Length: 171
Image (cartoon, rainbow, N blue to C red; front, side):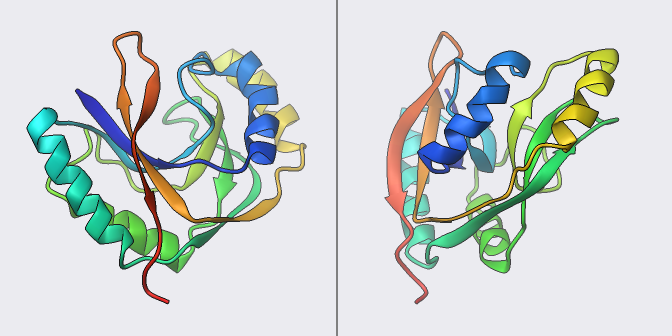
């Protein structure tokens, strides 16, 4: 089964992201707007219990962090995804590093670019038409994230919460 670890922003940020996602993101109905902290990995029922225990240990060493979005950006030309850029704070980078030290590695090992996707799976002409418009919107939010969510993928492709962890440590 496929799993991943994410942080969900506030309802305000989710609603703003969804106002674009419903038009430009075919995954709109499959997952709530989120910031991936540990990408997709495979685990069976026994393995995921171990992973969940390891995540619980990691979050004990991390305090809540500030999620600050600053602008709309794009991964083009690598992929035609458009996103809210999240400032990569030291706390967030350390959390990402510690979670990725857990033995189950991501399917694709990309450089960690914290973001909240608002558009994806577009052809180049669609991307080139939409991106300049989206770059002009204000996407500045700042809020505290105090929990992470271990998600799993259902047979229909949607994602749901397996377990939630509070960031409680390192005061």
